[in-house]
Length: 200
DNA sequence: CCTGCGATCGTCT
DNA sequence: GACGATCGCAGGA
Image 1 (cartoon, rainbow, N blue to C red):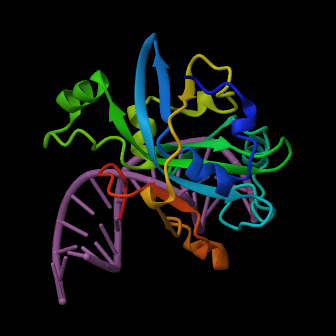
Image 2: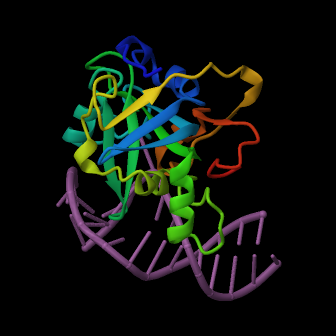
């Protein structure tokens, strides 16, 4: 069942991040539905978190605006000039929080296509086990910024049973050493023993 | 296992 | 002019 209730996303980022583990991310590319299972996420909170692009010290207007959207809207940005990262805004409109989708498990036929086209070593999870690679695999770019996941035909989530606590690993976030004490927040969540997670 | 580095470009200083 | 919520590769322990 597709998630169409905005209330699902209108919780704090550190609550939403583990909540969407195991959910199905659906991407419609010219009518072909690509489905992946979300296996790794990180929470960011502009009010208190120096790692967040919407923090007061980060003066990026448009990034803060995207994260300030109502929960369930997308926030997508270009990183290092060559990769996009896909986020879901959380909480209420005006509260700049969001969840970075760091990795996913490919489901179904598309997996095979990706493998045969690109992967010399036949490791078919190769293209979704990191935030940049995931966007490349799902053809996610800046044109999908500000999209409402509860109404869009291009990208949305499907519900799945909630995972139990002992199926989820909680760690510090990746590559935010510039963020001072906030780098130590335990705001990264991934599915235990899942081979598609970007890093142990 | 680990560390270092280049690619590449929109945004901010 | 500097830098980044990344990635793949090279080289050393």
